[in-house]
Image (spheres, rainbow over the protein chains, first blue to last red):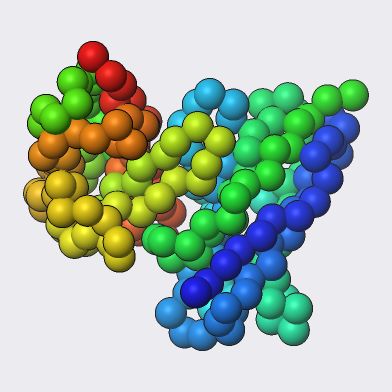
Length: 114
Length: 107
């Protein structure tokens, strides 16, 4: 059973960079069936797809966030990561990491505030 | 970008009744559509993929249909644990997109 767990700071200062890590267990992160993604959900609102990285390392991003987002993978640690630069209050959300359609982390609330 | 819309935005249903939720894509996504259920404080749970295939462990009262641009999720007889928000999600393109959700609450 594949399991995912997000980690990172729960509070980020405006204009700084949000950095989160997702640790994957239960299977190889580089098995050629996986698309690892980040999704966020502002409090009380819907789901927004941020970006993802294929098992091969190829990345894709939401065009509306592309200039600020980097998703990367570290197979040696069985982790993939999200970096979102120049954050504002509008980036306050629960951030989920997920794999393919079915595998989700529990989510981590990140607030952007001074 | 493929834009997903869902209707209605909210739905009040009595336990035991049938609920029908709709999802529409701005262009054809063939059958690359998934449905999720989300309860407060939880991550979304996959219900249906490939428009009509139930995910592992999902009860038979959940069914999906449709292809191209129009899709439907039907809950045949609502149970108390089914009151939640339901999202559709397309995975036809590398840039996945979600619908805005349909809230199903108790009438």
